Length: 403
Image (tube, rainbow, N blue to C red; front, side):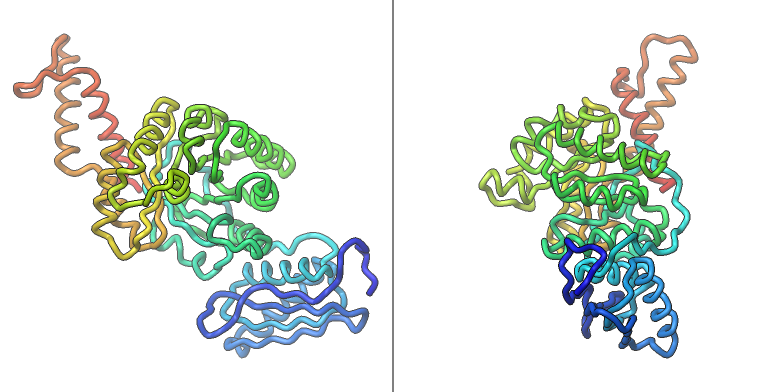
């Protein structure tokens, strides 16, 4: 079969999924042919309502990709336009018939740039190959969503997830959530970054970071992509430390780029490398987590804890999150929406803590107003570090109340 790109093998290919338990997705099978134009068939429960618009979009996408002759069979399970475009593009590229461009969905307005020190109590992981999780993620009100291209995506689906996440960044309104992407480790991360950076994610998570050069390499690539696409807004970095070497190099990693705003830890990989069992109490990872917090504070960035894997044990999650906050962490990852309110409550200053902090700040300010060198509250003397801690707690309480 002839092709305008002779180096690409032309063959039948598929993308997406369909079936009784699948929702918000589209399965596409493309069979290239030499002539005859486009022959498109569609099976969908919503054909009477949306069939014409799906077929119209299909022709537009294939035209954008330069596909002129092919049989295209689609099974729709309630896919939205950004998913339809992603599945068609992936199938066309896998088959070798896509000869140009991208099939980009209509772009929504970008949210305001994400502040460097914004609240990051909760980050909800969304598997990058599963569009059903994207649509309503913002309704659960996490501080951030993570569109994951790494561990939750099978190696054979990395290309499909990359296109889907790119389209989601472009077309999905995630409400007030910070829009994060977890890319794959280098060098595969470069393909991920090339796809997603043009759509201006707020933050990129760098998994399995062990050396500062990995941060610098990713940061340099992001800078070049931003310049190429005319992006004038920050893309923050959060390295994930998942090995003993990463923990020992934590400060060099934290200070490798001015765009690093936080460090987080991946405890499944870390404990596997230690050769120990990961427990709900976390004693086996206490050194690593405490070191990460100390490094983050020394570098002036945020310390973010790992996820709590047992989604059914909300009391266990609460205990973990409370201990995490006591260590100095400012948030943690979530793998299910039910974990979000528990995490938010655990990381919020209590009413008694707020009241005590306000009294300390007020006593200090009153002493300053009166020109006193000694500050006391009741029978206790108040040192400057106590006042500074109280001010930070009050600021955190304000930030939490406004979230």
